Image 1 (spheres, one colour):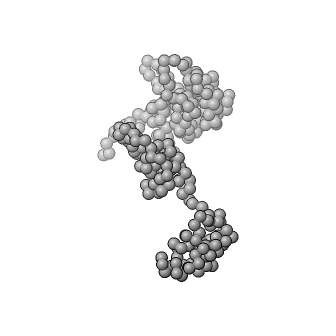
Image 2 (spheres, helix red, strand yellow):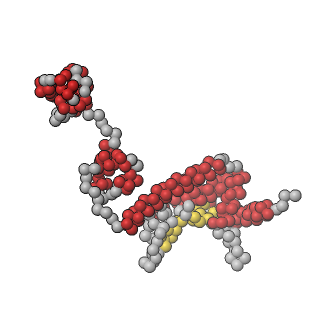
Image 3 (cartoon, rainbow, N blue to C red):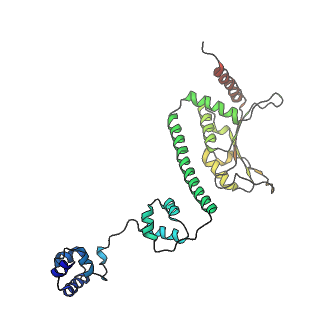
Length: 286
């Protein structure tokens, strides 16, 4: 330091020059080069108390994270909790919030509950990603299906979800009921494959009376592309005040019933094809 003092004996005069240059808008590097000051400690002393010009202040990409970290700290979060929430290092968090008061210590049991909840939330998110990956892979593996595959699929679909003839109740007619839009679309595609004329189709909606009935009717009409005249009166299910319904919200649209007129022959073909599928599944390969 003594050597620096001797080199820059007129410190005050040098400081006056540095301040003038700083107020003219020069950067530290420009002032250093102009005054031939090659010591950072001395340069800091010369410019002490003088703010940097606005143009030298580079935007900080972490400003938003810093502001969020300070907000979470004021809410009482620990460094560990802020790190989990923002995904930044504890050293950065410490630098950003060290001037703020420390949060009150919670009881160990409460801390453990909060930590466990955070871990579980992240685990659920991870599982959801894995679940979706498996679904997407299975979807891609299906590829295109042939007319024969669609026919067999439609037969199995109807036998699972359609009305069936019984010895004690003769019902040789095709009626399909479902709440899944994908099932309805597949059944409609199957009817098209069998060249069933759309004029032979009649629809009606079955839905809870407290739902958005008009929106549900419009949804099914748009999905099937059916003429409004082919829709019969909607069946409303009465509300039981003692029952807590879970099928609520925008995705609840009730069930769609599809009736095929003059369909006795079609029904017999479905039933015969179904038993043919069952027999083929259990036949031994000679």
